[in-house]
Image (tube, rainbow over all chains, first blue to last red; front, side):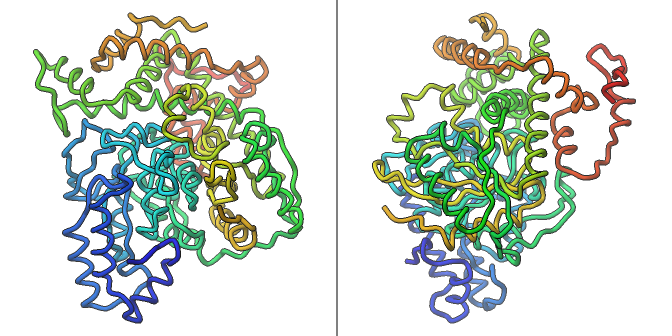
Amino acid sequence: MIDFRNVTIRQLHEMFRNNEVSVEEVTRDILKVAKENEYNAFIDVCEEDAIRKAKELDSNGIVNLFDGIPCAIKDNMNYTGYLNTCGSKILENYKSVYNATVVNKLLKANMIITGKLNMDEFAMGASNTTSYYGNVLNPLNKKCIPGGSSGGSAAAVASGLIPFSLGSDTGGSVRQPAAYCGIVGFRPTYGMVSRYGVVSLNCSLDQVGIFTNTVEDNALVFDMLQGKDENDTTTVDMKLNASANLEFSPKGKKIAIVSSAFDHVSNAVALNMKSVTEFLRKQGVEVEIVNMKYLHDSSYVYTGLVGCEITSNLSMFDGIRYGYRSEDYEDLDHLYANTRGEGFGLEVKRRMMIGMEMLKNKNHQRYEELHIYRRLIVNEFDELFNKFDYIITPTAPTTAYTFEEYDNMDKIDELYESQFMDATALAGLPGISVPMGFDKEKQMPHGLQFVANRKEDEKVFAIAKYFEDYYEVGEF
Amino acid sequence: MSNVNRDDVTNNAWALKVSLTESEIDYCVKEVNNFFNSRPQLDCEEVIEGCASLQPLRYVHSEIVNVFSTREESLISVDDILENTLDREGNYIKVPKVLK
C-alpha cells in the first residue's frame, strides 16, 4: 500500500510507467481503506467506475501525467450516479444526475475518483462536527477536529491514502483544515475554477480548492482544473501555468505580515510567525508588519453575507425535488417546513435565522453595511498590493482543537478564528496554506498562509514552494 | 443591543418554511442576538468612503459586486447599473454626482 505522504503525483506516474505497480492495484488498495473508513472521511465510495477505469488504463497503457492518478472529492460536487449529500440528512440517498465541471475535468484527465468525502453540513462549519454522517477525525490525533468544512478531504490526504483531494473554500474551508492536518491547501482567485455542479453555500465566495502533500502537486492539479466555463459566468477567461512557474527569487520582494499574526494568536503560532519573519528577512525579503483595520471585522461581514445568501440557496431543498421528505404534514407549507425542520441540522438553522433577520426591511441598513464593509476590505487589500508583492498571515490562530475543547467554544469566538481566511475570501484573493511548524505542547501543526493579488495564483505557488524547500518546519 | 425575541425567530422560520423545535428557537434567539451584538461600528467617514466605492452597485446582487471586484472588464458597466437599477420602491436610483 502506497503512503502518499511520501509519493508525489510525478513519482506515482513514473511507478505506473515502469510497471512497479498497476493502476488497479493502487485503486483497490485505496478503495479497501476507504470502506474501512478509520477517520470517517468517506461518505460514498465510487468503486464500480474506479475499478473499470483502472482496468482500462492498465490495458491501454499510461501516457499522460494524470493517467490513473487517484483522488477523491468533497460530497458537495456532483458525480453522476453517486451520493451527493452535502453532509446533510436532507440529501440522504440523493444521487447526482450530472457531473460538476471539475469532475468532468478529472475524468477527462483519466484520473480515478475513489470516493465522496465527508464535510460539515452544506459546508457550514470549521470543524467537521456538523455533518449528519458523523465527525471526521484528524489523522494526526483522533481526539482533534480535522477542521472544516472540507474535513474529509483534508483527512484523506493527511492520512496518506490519496495524493490529492478537492474541497470547497468559502471562508477558509480548504486552508484551515489543511493547516490543522499538516498538509497544503489552496484556494484560487475567485473565478479561476468553475463552481458549476458544486452545491452552493455562498455564490459570491465559494471556490473549489485543492489538498495535497506538496506545493508542486497542488500547482499541477490547479493547472488542470482552472479555466473559463460557459456554465459558470463568474469564471475568468485566462489560463495560468502555475506548475511551470514555481521559481521564486526572494531578493527585492516586499512582504507584508499582518500585525495580528503576532498578538491575536496562540503563543506557539506567534513564536512560529517570528521565526518565519526572521527566515524571510535572512533570505533578502523586505518584510513590513502592517495593521489591517478591517481584518478583524471580516468574520462578521462573512457570517452576515453567508446567512443572507443561504436563505435563498437552501430554498431548493423542500422535500419535493430532492432527497429527504417529511412524512408529517397537513398541507404543502407544512411539508416544506417539516422537511427542512427534520432535514437540516442546528448549525444550518442558526445561520438561516441570522440571514433572515439581516434581510428584514428594518435591518436593510445592516445588510448594506455588509457590502460597504466588503468594499472597504477589498480597498484595503488593493492598497497593500500597490506596495507589497505578498501578504502573509497564520492560516488559523491556533492548532486543531480537541473535540471537547471545540464543543465548549462560544460561537462568536469561533467566528473570529477564521478572520485571516474570511478577509481574503471576501476580496476574491488566492491563498495557500502550508505547514510552518508545530505547537510542541499540543503536538499538532500550524499553517502559514501566503496571499497574492487577484489572478496572481502563480506567485502564491512559487513562494509556497520556496518556503517548503528552504524553511525548516521541523518534526514533532 | 439587539433584542430579537422568540416571536421574531418563529416568524422568520415560518417565512423561510423551516420548522424549529422549542429548544432550537431558544438557541437561535441567543445566537442571533449574539451575532448582531458583535456588529462592528463604522464611523461616518468610513460609511461615506464605502458608499463612494459601492454606490453604483447598491441593491445589486452580491455576485455582481464580486464580478466587479475580480474582473478587469465587466460585461456590465457602472453606467448601465446607474441607469437601470431600481430601488426598493421601484424608482431609479438617483446617485449624487459627488459619488459618481
